[in-house]
Length: 541
Ligand code: NA7
Image 1: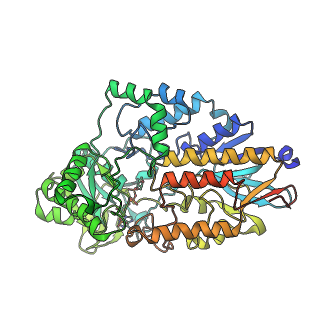
Image 2: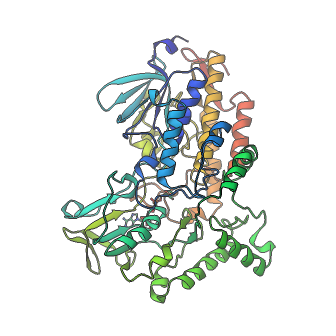
Image 3: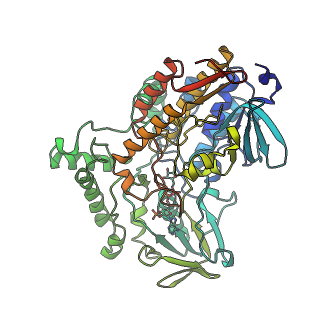
């Protein structure tokens, strides 16, 4: 098609994290020209920015890794069960070098807008330096957890100390020695950084709004023998991941909480507690309140066992449905509250009023601080996409189409009507967030590649979902979510962590395996539910 010749690139990708880099590699392998624009100073995506001490993945290294290349899987050696940020960043740099990706990645470059040009049937992509490039395909591989959330507290500018957000951590080491430090937030990031600051700082105050359920990670170095076995087992691991509900190898119970005795259940839970990592998933834990409570009760009992002061233990007791905020893995988190240089401030009871020049004031008192750490999370799922002015047919923006996030609709989480040739990776209404993200990334990228090859083979210019198919997919996502306890809890999944953000749970909860089946069936039926057009809007199916 003639637009192919006229464009600067076949595809423009935003982001050089796990998604953008594999997308680039795959497009090039398939003979397409592609360019990645990355705002940061190097590759790595969230793993470039999340340099805070203690940053670690809570999916095991054996599966939080690319599986597309057996050679890569065997050449790279992960050293610990749960890889830390420096190791993941080294891996992504290794991948960039190994596949010679850097020559097509432009760093320090932010994309501010991408507009679909109907006359030319291409995307006009605007860079912050005022230049513009064109591409047939536009792939914002921006991830779901890359738009940091610094709550709009009164007085932050007046603060005389240093402050940082975990998701935008400086390259230079932050020295906590001898300092009075405050951490706001007790999600995965806060829980990872808190024990480390506590060891270093003079005093640490943790500002907790919601107590979370805690499960030990029991991270450890991997035995050389296990490493060899894992590498040798590559094919099997890949197959198991693709056949799993969560894109990893966690234990599933395949039975209801009530199908085994209370004693058996306790044994299972104790064994899982000793193993570390996610608890085995019973079939009804996220649909049956009473089943859920059996796990919640178990985890609360652990808090009382670990935390010496009953008053502090009481403040650390979660009271939402277990697992309906993203499960936090920890190392020595609860133990940290047994230290005498750590204070736990309950900011649900006494909310934060303002940041002052000297520190932070709650409705109860002022805390004097030298360093303030925001572990306050992200404007998740839609946040990173809405930071870019993405406009499809008729100049309608994605933000307008999705009613600012109140009415998200995609087809398979991969595409959305009115935005031809735009592909999402781990997008809204994909299984991301509930699944090992690297697994979702790989399967999304592979689906997109198969699709663009199909378009090329059939001389087609554009693909976009039909509105009906899209509406049906969105409806099924909403119905699945509404049948679970997840929608009853305030979390970043439901948008409740950002004031004013519309509520919902725009993710696919039917499980990874099922998702892959559906995606494949649609391809097998020659892109059922998509509208495929040859040049100048000629309809072909
Ligand atoms: P999370 O999981 O969103 O945690 C953010 C934490 O910050 C959580 O404890 C929040 O309390 C707290 N928070 C957010 N805003 C405020 C305000 N305004 N006042 C007080 N406390 C606040 O982010 P993480 O970075 O830890 O983890 C994100 C994901 O990254 C994680 O799930 C993994 O997938 C990797 P809340 O619970 O909202 O009451």
